[in-house]
Amino acid sequence: MTDFKLLEKLCTVEGISGDEGSVREIIINEIKPFADEIKTDNLGNIIVICLELWRHYVLYDEWCL
Image (cartoon, rainbow, N blue to C red; front, side, top):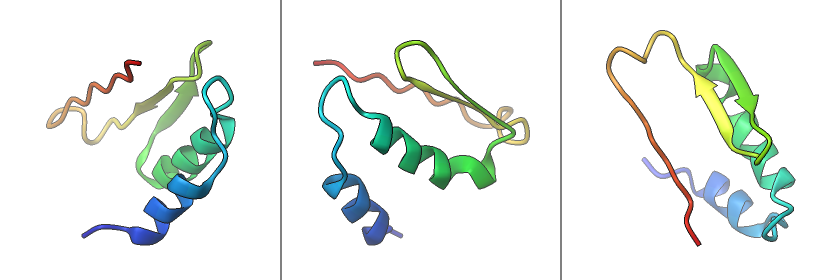
């Protein structure tokens, strides 16, 4: 099921290239209940560790311009 409120929030928040902190915060707040550990690296990528799910799924996501 599509979460239209989340989609609207992500589409309307200011997050210009190089200043995506507000988008990052929304994503972190949404995934926090499912994560055992959340980190961000020096480039601003979100790294999420879900110990319960790691045996079943591997997610690799990349943003290319």
